[in-house]
Length: 265
Ligand SMILES: [Zn+2]
Image 1 (cartoon, protein in one colour):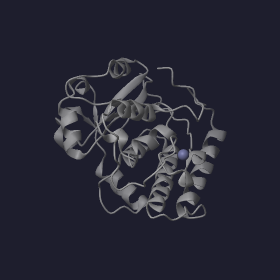
Image 2 (cartoon, rainbow, N blue to C red):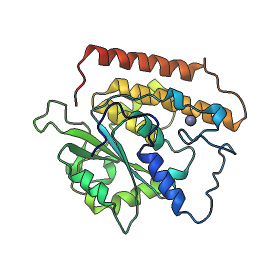
Image 3 (tube, protein in one colour):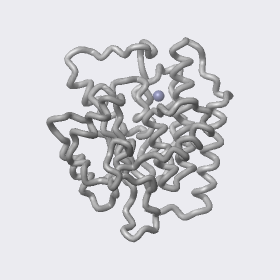
Image 4 (cartoon, rainbow, N blue to C red):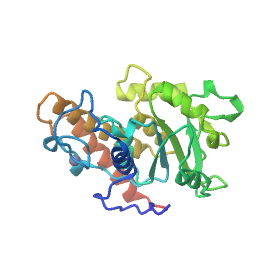
């Protein structure tokens, strides 16, 4: 799909940024973000310029790809975390979802033999024969790269998207196993099971055997959240705080992994 170069220019707008720009161009009146920081935003990270994280954007080579199906308003939300997935995972694709039409680019992607799509959705809503809890390993016979289809929406919207997207019906549904979810909650000190889209992507990377990339994405989410909240409260970001330390550590770990193994694809 022309986006597989691992060293993409960091300044080029990624799939979610492009979707946001398209969505803004279509809106009749300016979108007023609720609760977010006011005033000028950086085009690269959506934060106010004093809290910009563009220089920290980690790019991690992954075999897995991400396909975000975004509810109409999602690309406009300043707190949307699909944006962060696109920052980190070079092969991230994003499409706006509508009940009555489907983007031809999405259909082409789903038909591309390079990818094995998985629809990430709770298994309890799906016939059991369609549900999987594991991702085919890299050395599996068909050798396809996993493509995780994430429904980036509120839960009621996501259910509707799942039910009313017949072009997804032929793909396995990847349901996150309770053990994996509890391990993740422990590691992240999370109390509830309501994960944001970036956290779901991290769980998928883990299942695909890309734990180092998963940890980079989690650490980057924490840095984004820290800067977002500090900006909201008009406080400077703490560059020596826990979130930044975790991101530096995760990046160093990922760098070591790639130094010791030849990169593929
Ligand atoms: Zn920025």
